[in-house]
Image (cartoon, rainbow, N blue to C red; front, side, top):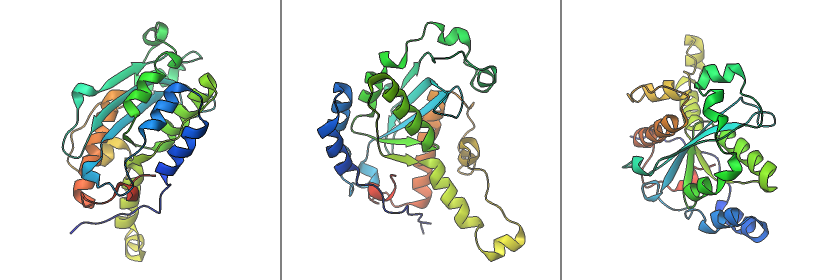
Amino acid sequence: MFNKIISPPSIDWKSKFSRKLEVVQNQALKAFYEAGVPEPSTPLDEVMFLAMDFETTGLNSDEDDIITIGTVPFNLNRIFINQAQHWTVKPSKQLPEESVVIHGITHTDVLDAPDLIGVYEEILGQMAGKVMVVHYQRIEREFFDKALNARINEGIEFPVVDTMHIETQLQQKVSGGILNKIRGRKPESVRLGASRSRYGLPLYTPHHALTDAVATAELLQAQIAHHYEQNMPISQLWI
């Protein structure tokens, strides 16, 4: 028996991409929107996903910058490690010492790194035609949108499956209700490592963009195996 967790009705991403294609000027963005998205009725086991993770100088997309990006394509049966990509990019401001402590990326690491303007076309190429999978969608969506706006005067929108959102829903379901409240049962952590541990997935060193992208891909595979039917339409999971 599957413990189904269904998201609210989602955006019509196919129509949104068509509208974007009519107005976008940048050729790389145009190619991204031309690649489109799967039909909303496409079963999960027929979707090609792209797990994506950003490491940033902080959590404020108005003030902080992207410093590394990791991506890896996958489906429900396989993670295509041979197609994984990892980019280091130079932030516009000096790295805060507290961010160096978290992700281990130093001033030397970004000294000769390109600006995002030099690699964004490659990133869009990786994303084209796939459904992005992230753990906490605000980071990847907001940071990439604002970073592109600052460089090419056009932002980006794309559908995501958010493994943190899924895990939050699950924790609310299993810890909700009056009885659980009386017993003092509270939702467990939905951080990436804690979420993975509930499915028996191995611990990875956190805060490395490519490692976290692979970890997110594995987490979604486990979540779907435990809580969803593989023939469920992608429109019920993307947001």
